[in-house]
Amino acid sequence: MSTLPTESPQMLNQRQTAIVAPAITRRARRKRHPHRWVALLAIVFICCGFILPFLWMISTSLKTVSQTMTDPPQIIPHPAVPGNYWKVIISDKVDFPLYTRNTLVIAALSVLGTTLSSAVAAYGFAKIRFRGRGILFVLMLSTMMIPFPVMMLPLFMIFRFIGDHTPLQMLGTFRPLWLPTWFGSAFSIFLLRQFFLTIPDDLGEAARIDGCSEWGIFWRIMLPLSRPALAVVALFSFMWAWNNFLGPLLYLQRPEQYTLALGLQAFQSQQGGTDWNLLMAASMLVMLPVILLFFLAQKTFIRGIATTGLK
Amino acid sequence: MNRELRQFGKGMAFLSPWLIGFLVFTLLPIAVSFYFSLCKFDLLQAPRFIGAHNYTDLLHDQTFWKATWNTFYYTAMALPAGLLVSLGLAMLLNVDIPGQAIWRTIIFMPSLVPIVASAMLWMWLLNPRLGLINVLLARLFALLHLHVSTPPWLADPRWAMPALALMSLWGVGNAVVIYLAGLQDVPVELYEAAELDGAGVFGRIWHVTIPMVSPVIFFNLIMAIIGALQVFDVPYIMTNGGPVHSTYFMSMYLYDNAFVYLQMGYASAIAWIMLLIVLALTGVAFWSSSRWVHYQGK
Image (tube, rainbow over the protein chains, first blue to last red):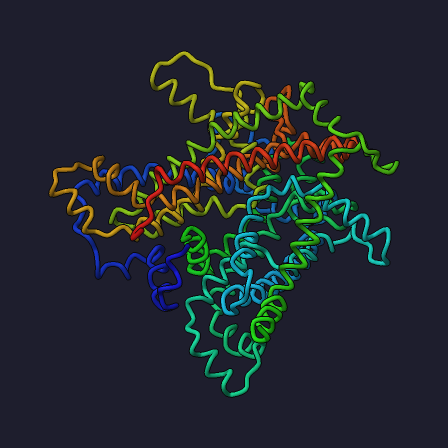
């Protein structure tokens, strides 16, 4: 099933940081490739293609409307108009500061919920032996294959039902967006379980002999040792909440509840798609926090993504 | 026995967050959806059982066939291209070249961009007259003395779908990182042995790299199948299914039936067909995997 359990957490860390920081692998560097200059040329060319859209986005966001219409286009806008960003922030069509707050509230609740509940369940899958565990684990993994569009209609109906029959209003509130995250996500449980398996059982046994309960072992030994894996899960659930479009589209009804993803789309459809400069400035604003987060937590990101493929 | 029961209780206690979530937010919705798919249900009146009527109606529904065809058409373009490009990029990025960390970051960055923001960006890039892509293409055509006009991309039914597939290639970074992790596990001795046997670059790729990373290819294939079949956000934002339904996907027809036409039963039948297609395709992938996926040490 996996190659992870045989490795210590340190080894895991080392190998996976090697993906971003080649310096670590230098020790075992293989013979220099004779065609490496061909590879370098190819990669530089391709990277230009990958980075051009970003430059185009930045360039457009600093133009006036008439500057976006020139042919040939100005690559470096002259004069540059950084005021576009401010115009977007104080726009009366969309309330980006409010949408940012909404998105952050939902994201915070999702991060907390996903991380805590997934860790608890992952501990059950990794460290407690009981009948039926294997089947339940396979069942959990297979739920990852259900496309969300298949679930959206019945989920909508279930939330409507709960709203109609209990005092808890669901539709038109943030609840349908974060409540399900408090029941674990299959992907996060899988990731944390893989990590827990790399932590030797002896630690838990020793604590158990000292009279520590199972929950105590989980809470006081497992969790502190698992910070890197918990960080991966927290980061991914934040990204997911920040980027989620279909969820808010389904459940949120009033514009003052919109998230950034939804607000950005509303901004585009409201202004009819002519002011590309403002639209690009708005897109930049939605994108920047994520890019910043990536540069702050680069290793955590790469480690997490690399682990998902190691099945 | 007593001990075993206690272990079971403990296990269930720890699994309970997931178990409850699974029952309420996965199993129940699927069951409800199946029941709805056998009903006429417009949200105003209670669901009325009508048997397989929704499914037989779907068979005669031109729009449904169009949406299904589009979904497969997109999958047939974006999936193989994505797999090839991501594996090729990972192999290039695995070669020991100067600036490796920078190139890796550049390839990965687009997959971080929130989907709505990247949809906005690509609408502008693909703008037929002012977009960067056509500006550059026009230059290239002029340079080569080609007298062809640039494609109208999203404004033309023939070009809209290829445009979406092209855009999907920008976001292959995730898969590239997964491949890179796999490539770093390939033992160097295997390449050396192949080289001694006279294998060239492509021989080594075909006989060493591909078989050794085949489990990762398999994983990315499964993820790509699921991802391609449920595409919604990008066409919904960029084209809203147009022009003339050329980018109208199954997921969008499902959404429209459910939340625009309020035909909940009919929409549920579409959901179930979608689920069956995903299961069938991943099933074929799993079934074929014993022929081409090689696990190390097994």
